[in-house]
Length: 179
Image (cartoon, rainbow, N blue to C red; front, side, top):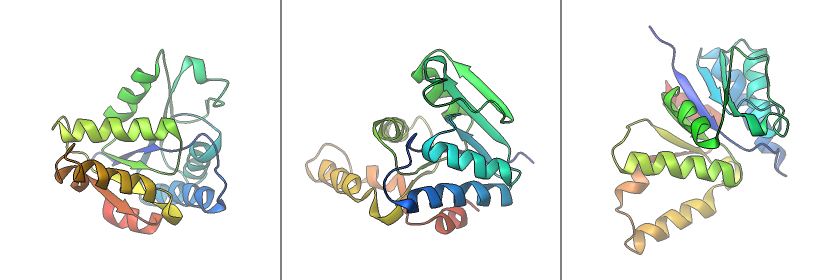
C-alpha cells in the first residue's frame, strides 16, 4: 500500500507568532508518526524548514521541490530523501501538487496564497478532488476566510467554493481528518 503524501504550503519566514513555528514543528513530527510523506518547497528556512527538520528528525520521508533561482534564498535542503530542482515556480508548484494526495496551507505570505488559490481554482474547475486544508493557527487565515465569504456573497463564486476548503485550527485536528 502506498503511503499518503501531504503537500505542505507555508511561509519561508517564521512569522511573529511563535505558535506558527510550533505548529510547523508539530506537523512534521506527527506526519512521521503517521507515516505520511512530506511534499514541500525544499527550503530550510521559516515554517517550511521547521516542518521538514521535524519530519526528518522523526523519520518521515521528505520530498522537496525548489526552483534553481531560490536555492540560495530559501537555503535548499539537500539532505532530504528526494530533492528536485525545477527551472520555474510554475514547475515547482506542479511537481509539488502532483506528488501530494492532500494539501495543507500553514500561515505564509504571497507565495502560500498563490499556491492556495491555484489548487482551489483547479478544484473549482474539477481538475482534481484532493482535500485542501487551511491550518488556521490563532486565526491567521480569518481575514482570508472573510474575503472568500465576500467573493461568494458578491456573486463571483458559488457557495461550493467554500466547501472545497476544510478549516482546521490545530495540527491534531488536521491529522485526525487525514486519517
